[in-house]
Length: 111
Image (tube, rainbow, N blue to C red):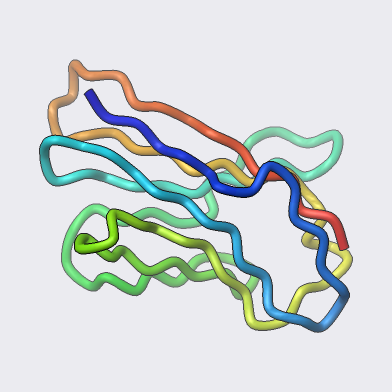
């Protein structure tokens, strides 16, 4: 079975500073990893995903995440926080076996 753990339930940052939302995963096989975002009063949107290849993944709105197999991490970062980034951020993992369900976890970002 696979799982994700987001290490901070709520992250508060000042506008213009680095955003870091931490996510660690557990998976017995090569994982597919995802970050989703849900802005207030909106639906869930895919922010970025890692499936294979380049370990540094660039997403929308200046966000990026780096897949580090040795640390089993997929932390989400943004160089400069903006008030429009206030939202819930969800890290998810799904292994490469289609029949196996993934797991979703959440962080709340406040600016």
